[in-house]
Length: 194
Image 1 (cartoon, rainbow, N blue to C red):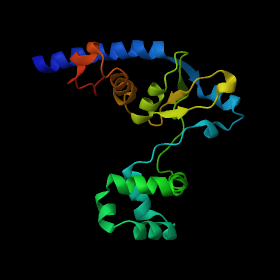
Image 2: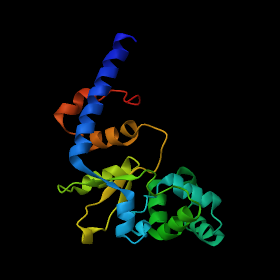
Image 3: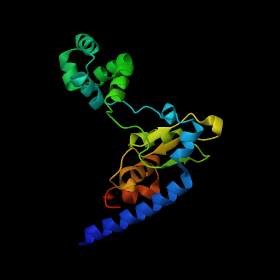
C-alpha cells in the first residue's frame, strides 16, 4: 500500500467511525416486525413512494403497455424534447402522468420499496425532515405516518450485498453536514472500502 492509499484508508476509517457514532446518536433501531405489527400487516401503506426520475419516465415511455397514455404524451410533447429528456418535458410528464407512472413502477417491480433487512432506523426525537428527504436521495426507503404510535419517520435499506456505510450512511452524513467545517478533510476520500 503506497502512502496515498494508506492516508485514504486512514481517513476512510476515521470517517466511518465518525458516521457510526452519528448513526447511533441520530437513529433508534427498530425491528421491521414492530412496524408491521403496529400497522396490522399493512406496512406498505406507510412507505413513502420512491421519487420518479428521468430513467423511470423513459422506461415508462419505452415499455409501458398503456399505449394510449404513451401516445398522448408523445402527441403533447415534441419528440426531440422526449429524446433529450429536457427538464421541462420531465416536469410536464410528472405533473400530468405521475399516477400512471407509479402504477407502472408498482406493476413491474421497477424498484423494490420494502425493507430488505429486519432493522429500520427511526429518526430520534430531534426529528428533521432534511434527514429523511436526504436519506431517500441516497437510496434509503422511508416509513412515515405512524404519529399515532409516537414514532418519527424511519429509514430502511432496500438492497443488500454491499457496505451500508459506503452505500448509505456516509453519503447521508456528508449531505446532512455538507457545510460543516469538520468534514472538509473527507472531501476526496474514497470510502467504498469501509
